Image (cartoon, rainbow, N blue to C red; front, side, top):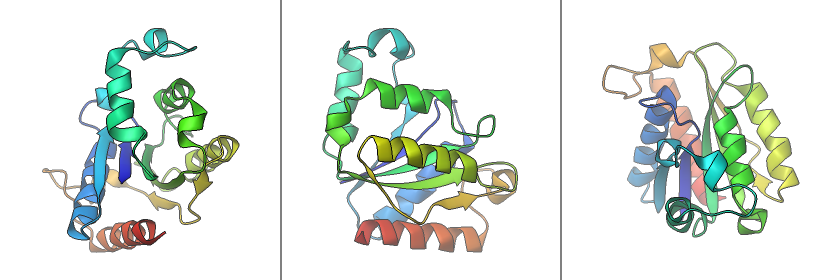
Length: 173
């Protein structure tokens, strides 16, 4: 199974919209994939699930989305020139032994022109440290505000093709 992670807890984010589009492309390719939005994380995660503590809610999320996954696709928005703090907190809350040796691909999302390339590079270092294998094709999606229609669907054909190719590459990897 592949878990697609929308790596922000911001309600109704463009990142979640891109992640939904990615999940739909994987479904069309008949790939076993689940979408995990950080909107589902416990709001008090920093108090309940760090430093060897574990809430029932977080454990349930781990059992549904993280532990059974062989691969991950992190869809990562650009926050302050990098990635959201909630993503680092999430990684800190998960026992690294659970994910060691698993494969990770990344899609960067930004309203600017770089598609969160810097944030994906920052994440690469962290994921390598955690013993995870990072796919070399990090897909930056720039100018996300003009790529999405009012329903959250991608209206740009080139972006759809790039996401579809990325999803196919990840599925075959």
